[in-house]
Image (cartoon, helix red, strand yellow):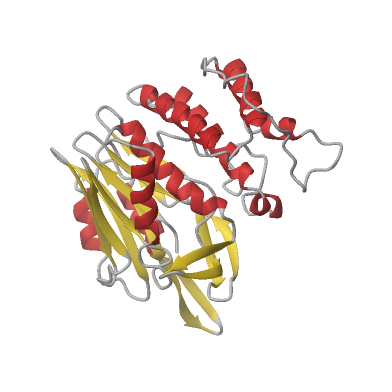
Length: 344
């Protein structure tokens, strides 16, 4: 199961999600991982993220079958600019669709922002809705059968520990890091339930983070990143997101994500560019203080970002201890910093 998180305030709406599509035996951890974009914005006032099973094979005899993909049909219809009532179409189309277990978490805006979900079978047991100060969040619990409060706990703890507000940049920062943290854990996850540790739980949350922002004056899709022609790569076209090297080093996930925020700060809608710059600065500070990335590497990346994008990001304090970053999958002749530079 994927992870979709929606968030609204009186001023904006955000939908974020991972990009891993998993097929196979999830119980045994033997499944194929491919990329699928599951978060979409359909015009200035409607966005949604999908989870569950949206397609099936309809047998036609002689061992053959026809693939029925409800998401493909729905996506094409909602993309039609002539369709004005997109929420109305979703709520009419999805319920009672046969042979699937499909869920859409949506954000809709008439006069105010509203958040909700629509399912094919009426089953919403994995969906939660919580309030944090001026924010309302709706999300699914991808590990519901093992720990039904896993994502909720991550959100509440992160919101409190980082002393966040209901601002746009704090909300993007929070959703980005909740999803990224689960992705960076790799193909398995260790969970603690009622004091008992459960190790090696197969994770079907992976790929990279995608984010859609609805705000005043935004009339195009993808405010945080641009689509690439080959969806089977990370955002820089450098590393396959399910390669062994990525699974063994969460640094790659975090550096790649940082590159996404850098590009968003430059190329995003002018209405939210300053907010994204605030997210970028907050992300660098977070990576430094939590030691997710080594100080030397962060200094090097800040220099490269400033050189390439003229963002004038403040450099980290010079008097801090530094340590050389070593990652075992690199060859002795390969420079670690040069590898990460390619993401930008």
